[in-house]
Length: 351
Image 1 (cartoon, rainbow, N blue to C red):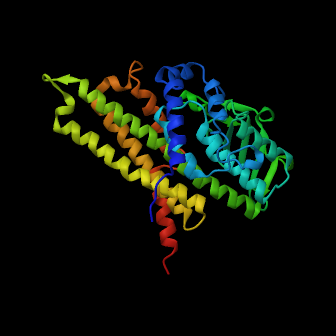
Image 2: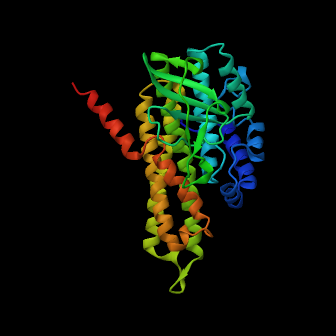
Image 3: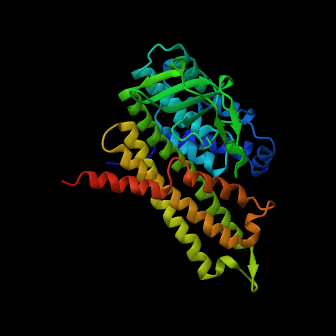
């Protein structure tokens, strides 16, 4: 069997790459550091291309596509350190709302409105977990919609609320474009979207999707850092030669590239497993996130080492990629967290 992206998926990815190359330069990212915003002209462009609603059902204005279609686009977002919350809104919140709409809350006017808002690009979303109330939520500060996981009398619950009705305390972030916040919101019967077994199923699928989508963004970040570092090594002179001519530097860059090449199929395979709905999607998602986190952290390490002290200065663009990589490597479970999850899963099968 041949596993590869279709021509349409590749063309879609390339179109997004061209747009982001023009509209999301490192100067644009620096500007977003000074004045972060969830919705911008760049966001509107992505919405017009159908990106924000790619995973939203066609009945609600989306394209009705899957995670396999979205992953290469999120990878492109990582490649340019896209400031807007595309991964969270299009890759996590949109599919979660679609799951809720088809299982627990069919006909719920709020869910339908939110789905249409995601598809049109009129809203951005953040997903929070009230079971960890002091854990800052990426994208919560400035989001239009908050989806909240909480413990209820009958097990886990899923809630949703328009952000205007939920105060959010802003939290300083290493990467200001991620806009961390702590929602000061108490779940209520009016905000309940799903509970019990249905909520548990939706939450589990969301955690797997989030791990894979975050992994895809880490792939793009790692690729960009390796490319930038290789180019720098060609230009930087030491002892009368480009430092890239030294074997030690070559090995550093090659080692990071190897980790990236191993991580890519893991992320793509996990996206396919989630779309297909067969097999152990939780294991596939954990493998993907662990590999992608490792690849991005190694790319960060060698990039900073090859650049030297200048790599973390404000004047050098590398720090933009480093900060996002360090943050996302921990988001939705670190590599260690997901390896522990895999071990627990495997040990549970022992007779």
